[in-house]
Image (cartoon, rainbow, N blue to C red; front, top):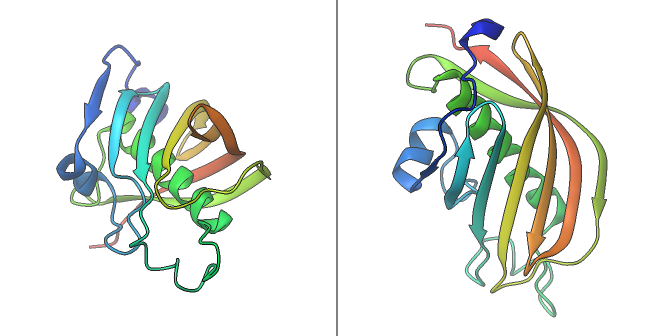
Length: 160
Protein backbone atom coordinates (compact mmCIF):
# COMPACT_ATOMS: atom_id res chain seq x y z
CA UNK A 1 0.00 0.00 0.00
CA UNK A 2 1.30 3.47 -0.81
CA UNK A 3 0.09 7.05 -0.52
CA UNK A 4 -1.39 6.92 -4.04
CA UNK A 5 -3.90 4.29 -2.91
CA UNK A 6 -5.62 6.72 -0.53
CA UNK A 7 -9.08 7.82 -1.62
CA UNK A 8 -9.23 11.53 -2.47
CA UNK A 9 -12.18 12.26 -0.19
CA UNK A 10 -14.68 12.84 -2.98
CA UNK A 11 -17.33 10.38 -1.71
CA UNK A 12 -19.42 10.92 1.43
CA UNK A 13 -21.28 7.99 2.94
CA UNK A 14 -22.41 6.08 6.03
CA UNK A 15 -21.75 2.60 7.41
CA UNK A 16 -24.16 0.28 9.21
CA UNK A 17 -23.01 -2.38 11.66
CA UNK A 18 -22.62 -4.97 8.88
CA UNK A 19 -20.21 -2.72 6.98
CA UNK A 20 -18.34 -1.86 10.21
CA UNK A 21 -17.82 -5.58 10.89
CA UNK A 22 -16.14 -5.91 7.47
CA UNK A 23 -13.61 -3.20 8.35
CA UNK A 24 -12.85 -3.86 12.03
CA UNK A 25 -11.62 -7.11 13.58
CA UNK A 26 -13.28 -6.27 16.93
CA UNK A 27 -16.32 -8.18 18.18
CA UNK A 28 -18.48 -8.14 21.31
CA UNK A 29 -17.69 -7.06 23.96
CA UNK A 30 -14.92 -4.95 22.43
CA UNK A 31 -16.59 -3.50 19.33
CA UNK A 32 -17.19 0.10 20.41
CA UNK A 33 -18.63 1.68 17.24
CA UNK A 34 -22.32 1.06 16.50
CA UNK A 35 -22.79 3.17 13.38
CA UNK A 36 -20.89 5.53 11.10
CA UNK A 37 -22.99 8.64 10.54
CA UNK A 38 -20.72 10.05 7.86
CA UNK A 39 -17.44 9.14 6.22
CA UNK A 40 -15.46 11.27 3.82
CA UNK A 41 -12.61 8.89 2.85
CA UNK A 42 -9.17 10.36 3.32
CA UNK A 43 -10.62 13.27 5.31
CA UNK A 44 -13.00 12.57 8.21
CA UNK A 45 -15.46 10.20 9.86
CA UNK A 46 -18.26 10.65 12.41
CA UNK A 47 -19.33 7.59 14.40
CA UNK A 48 -21.88 6.73 17.07
CA UNK A 49 -21.57 4.57 20.19
CA UNK A 50 -24.78 3.99 22.15
CA UNK A 51 -23.78 3.62 25.80
CA UNK A 52 -26.24 1.35 27.65
CA UNK A 53 -26.42 0.05 31.21
CA UNK A 54 -25.83 -3.42 29.69
CA UNK A 55 -22.15 -2.64 28.92
CA UNK A 56 -20.01 -5.38 30.52
CA UNK A 57 -17.82 -2.89 32.43
CA UNK A 58 -20.55 -1.04 34.32
CA UNK A 59 -20.99 -3.53 37.20
CA UNK A 60 -17.40 -2.79 38.24
CA UNK A 61 -16.93 0.81 37.01
CA UNK A 62 -18.61 1.99 39.23
CA UNK A 63 -21.41 0.11 41.00
CA UNK A 64 -22.73 3.25 42.75
CA UNK A 65 -22.49 5.51 39.66
CA UNK A 66 -21.71 3.78 36.36
CA UNK A 67 -19.16 5.68 34.25
CA UNK A 68 -17.66 4.56 30.91
CA UNK A 69 -13.92 4.05 31.48
CA UNK A 70 -11.84 6.73 29.78
CA UNK A 71 -9.61 4.14 28.15
CA UNK A 72 -12.68 2.70 26.42
CA UNK A 73 -13.69 6.14 25.14
CA UNK A 74 -10.17 6.37 23.67
CA UNK A 75 -10.53 2.85 22.24
CA UNK A 76 -13.82 3.82 20.56
CA UNK A 77 -12.04 6.83 19.07
CA UNK A 78 -9.17 4.58 17.92
CA UNK A 79 -11.63 2.17 16.29
CA UNK A 80 -13.12 5.13 14.40
CA UNK A 81 -9.63 6.04 13.12
CA UNK A 82 -9.14 2.46 11.95
CA UNK A 83 -12.46 2.61 10.12
CA UNK A 84 -11.50 5.84 8.38
CA UNK A 85 -8.08 4.52 7.35
CA UNK A 86 -9.60 1.24 6.14
CA UNK A 87 -12.33 3.02 4.15
CA UNK A 88 -9.79 5.45 2.70
CA UNK A 89 -7.46 2.73 1.41
CA UNK A 90 -10.07 0.09 0.52
CA UNK A 91 -8.40 -2.43 2.85
CA UNK A 92 -10.06 -4.85 5.27
CA UNK A 93 -9.03 -7.70 7.55
CA UNK A 94 -10.58 -10.03 4.96
CA UNK A 95 -8.15 -8.82 2.28
CA UNK A 96 -5.19 -9.01 4.63
CA UNK A 97 -4.87 -5.66 6.43
CA UNK A 98 -5.41 -4.54 10.02
CA UNK A 99 -5.03 -1.07 11.49
CA UNK A 100 -3.38 -1.08 14.89
CA UNK A 101 -3.71 1.66 17.52
CA UNK A 102 -0.04 2.73 17.87
CA UNK A 103 0.00 6.09 19.62
CA UNK A 104 -1.87 8.71 21.56
CA UNK A 105 -0.98 12.26 22.54
CA UNK A 106 -2.76 15.08 24.32
CA UNK A 107 -5.62 12.92 25.66
CA UNK A 108 -8.01 14.97 27.78
CA UNK A 109 -11.23 13.98 29.55
CA UNK A 110 -13.77 16.73 30.18
CA UNK A 111 -16.95 15.02 31.43
CA UNK A 112 -18.07 11.51 32.44
CA UNK A 113 -19.96 9.32 29.97
CA UNK A 114 -22.88 7.47 31.57
CA UNK A 115 -25.51 4.89 30.60
CA UNK A 116 -28.03 6.38 28.19
CA UNK A 117 -25.50 8.68 26.55
CA UNK A 118 -24.85 8.68 22.81
CA UNK A 119 -21.15 9.14 22.21
CA UNK A 120 -20.51 10.97 18.93
CA UNK A 121 -16.94 10.41 17.77
CA UNK A 122 -15.35 12.65 15.16
CA UNK A 123 -11.96 11.89 13.63
CA UNK A 124 -10.07 13.92 11.04
CA UNK A 125 -6.91 12.95 9.19
CA UNK A 126 -3.97 15.17 10.08
CA UNK A 127 -1.65 13.22 7.80
CA UNK A 128 -1.04 9.78 6.33
CA UNK A 129 2.50 8.81 5.36
CA UNK A 130 3.10 5.31 4.09
CA UNK A 131 1.14 3.11 6.51
CA UNK A 132 1.14 5.52 9.47
CA UNK A 133 -1.90 7.72 10.05
CA UNK A 134 -2.32 10.60 12.52
CA UNK A 135 -5.74 11.97 13.48
CA UNK A 136 -7.45 14.64 15.54
CA UNK A 137 -10.20 12.89 17.51
CA UNK A 138 -13.03 14.12 19.69
CA UNK A 139 -15.92 12.49 21.53
CA UNK A 140 -19.07 14.46 22.32
CA UNK A 141 -22.28 13.83 24.27
CA UNK A 142 -25.25 16.14 23.65
CA UNK A 143 -22.96 18.55 21.80
CA UNK A 144 -20.51 18.82 24.71
CA UNK A 145 -16.90 17.70 24.47
CA UNK A 146 -16.15 14.72 26.73
CA UNK A 147 -12.76 13.65 25.35
CA UNK A 148 -10.14 14.79 22.83
CA UNK A 149 -6.85 13.30 21.65
CA UNK A 150 -4.36 12.94 18.82
CA UNK A 151 -4.40 9.28 17.76
CA UNK A 152 -2.10 7.29 15.51
CA UNK A 153 -2.81 4.01 13.76
CA UNK A 154 -0.68 1.90 11.47
CA UNK A 155 -1.58 -0.57 8.75
CA UNK A 156 -0.09 -4.02 9.02
CA UNK A 157 -0.36 -6.64 6.33
CA UNK A 158 -1.41 -9.95 7.84
CA UNK A 159 0.82 -12.93 7.21
CA UNK A 160 -0.78 -15.75 5.25
